[in-house]
Length: 628
Image 1 (cartoon, helix red, strand yellow):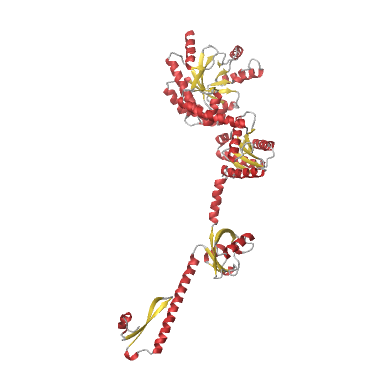
Image 2 (cartoon, helix red, strand yellow; image 1 turned 180 degrees about the vertical axis):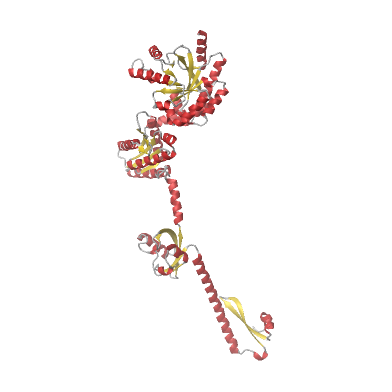
């Protein structure tokens, strides 16, 4: 183009009369113009014009080459700068190029890798079958993804997530393979840590309840498919909480780790040993030939657990109970086996003679009945019309006059009739209703006593039993004091009865609570004395006012020399400690006479009075007042 508007500005600047402008193309796109200007006397020859046109084409191609070079340089910079390790292989898998991240990850320089097979594509680096699958995917033009543990140049290992992308020619053959490696070692460690936390107990390193259930699912599936037997054993440690309470949680943890190690070693043939609760363990034993085989394992575990544990300054021992459920007779699915083994364990813990029990259908029926009874008791507490407090009058042995009355809960079930007090308390303790029940009994007993006093009855000791569950609950002292104030009953007129076993579960806690009650002016008695395991050393530290001789000694006191000696010894012990002594279960004149002869202070029993409703007891008390 000669002298067009395209070059007018340039011609004016260059002070020329005519110009020849040639376009410069890069891949079909106009990227510039080559211009030649002249005056009339210096016009270019046709040969010069032809040379200029050839030059413009060459310059256009040079632009293309330069742009491609810059783009390639940019790609190379990008490939080198990315955090992911990248290498490129030829169609046979030999390394052609690696980026800097790959060198940092593996410790190898690019020159050391060139021409070599990378670990992911090298025989021996993976299983032969895996290697064949990788190459099959690449030759089919598919991207392959996977993980591999590779070894660095310095010998350390790392886990990488790999993406292999094939580059094919027109015939579909693999020309190159581009591999992108991401170091996932830290992520895998985190995942493993999470898996450990989710599936394993952090203290004992044993499987926890989650993993136990998963293992049991697998074991049941295997047993069902192969027609094999299977046993689930639940193990509970007796009075473990006492170790924590008396020696501290650090000692308790050390003890648990020792016991867990013992169980794991003793049950070496078990498929899984797990810690499923604070002091509960569980076993899965597959291939069980008979219930006797499972029982033998259970008995061995009990003996192993009973062996004293040396914890430096302390030698600690506990007992154990075991509940067993057998597949398929006790359950054909994991949930049922767990439920039934737990039920058998519950019965073993309640039993005085057996520490190892198998599940039975009778237990199932009993559990169902107990669950139903729990719901009925909950409703009875809400309605208040089925429950009552009866009183059994206590008598002073010297004067023969009433000195107190023990409050006893009674429940008349609308369908089952009278429910034994031991059943009521047992159901309440198992379901945590004991707090509501205990509160109701104490409140009702004080209300009745306040009514008696308003109607002319003299002062008495009102004895109310406190359960182990109530005794452990915070705020008990404050609640008792509040109820006394609510009914305007003097603290000295209330006696709380606690068993030896309750006090010995946590001696330090018991001492603190007894001192608080005593400081408030409330009287305290040890119930069923002689049947527990308290020592004289502890007894003298307990702030109590009275010992209650258990009826098991009183029953045969005139016929069994040992019972007579024990009863007399308890009375003498109580008096030597400055305590009053009352005997329960007095049913004959001979028993009454013997207790009087050995200096017992008070008695209660069917000989003198049965437990009766509050109104009837009031009439009895008022009758004694008139007679006296």
